[in-house]
Image 1 (cartoon, rainbow, N blue to C red):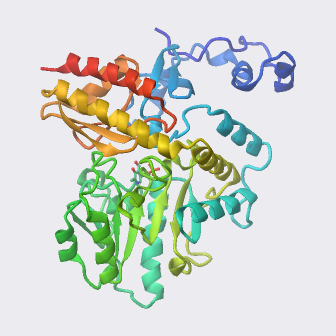
Image 2 (cartoon, rainbow, N blue to C red):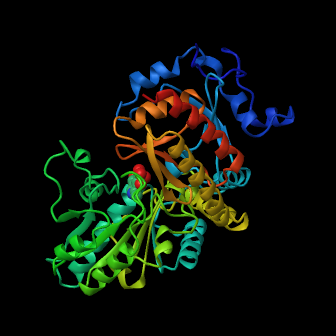
Image 3 (tube, protein in one colour):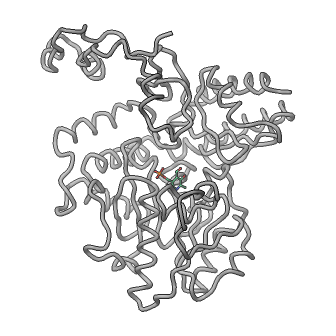
Length: 441
Ligand code: PLP
């Protein structure tokens, strides 16, 4: 069983043909790029190298992915998988979407990066489009969800510091929340295992139960700078908020002169069938964090904020070398255009209902293995019964050619590309059905 680099490359010892030569021979696009890769390393067992040379901080499945198209990906053995995780809610247009591929290629040939000492066409346009579309006044760009939340945290604390309220720095967050892996972001994250062993945590965070408004009310005080919340807890187990919870937080924040920060990293940019998850509750955070699906797989993070917070981070207080680079911003602009022009928000709502019904039917059919489904749009979870581990199911569905991820301790998470079809969802559900039957004890 070989996991070596794919076939069809230039044989060892031979000079790889140039792109113009390949184009002349009628070989274009991804095929041309593949043909340019030297086969010098064809004998490498990529899985072995990965296991030996990558850090080992992820629990990685024993497959090496090589290419994708739409909702499908292929590994180096040529095995096809239906991708219903989309890089954990990232590849919103699926893989190798023609418009995104063309936009990335065109931007790469125009300007990739130019530093934040200058404006660039793409980050200026993206800031304008995001603010106009999502109802904010200012944008800051970075490279990931953790960085976006880190920026929210620094912005919040400095905002009150600059107003002379130096003791107002406490952040109220939620058990099982997930906001990223930097030390600041893990301080807001509500799962103790993510903080274990990393020394004294940052001070000034209080965690209460998600959905428990009274607990939030009880902890509010003049030292609270902000409440930070996910509109649906993603990593925590795909947990939608109880009705009235988000509006209740908005009111509590206002009553106490604190900010409401909304972490839309997983729920944002169409994932739940609206541009933002907070829209389902008619709530608007003072500032939001975005990342994941924003540029369809090109690394990017962003915070959007109202004008009342614009002065919190003056020159020299915060920044990011790669943040707002033209390549990522051009990709994000294209993702937004495709979502809009192809009517993907309505599609997500329809596909999400289809997936939700299918998962509910599976839960009914396999009551010993799963107890129900929950979620919003194309962020869905199948809740496993006590005694069943998501990992066992993930392996069983992968063996049947479907990629999924876990969330929380007992949830199988579905975050397919926003372009997924009902037929693809049905194919995935059929494989999950078989896997559930296979593990039932
Ligand atoms: N916030 C939320 C709600 C997330 O789901 C995640 C990642 O899963 C993050 C923040 C962290 O994002 P990143 O991994 O890009 O740093």
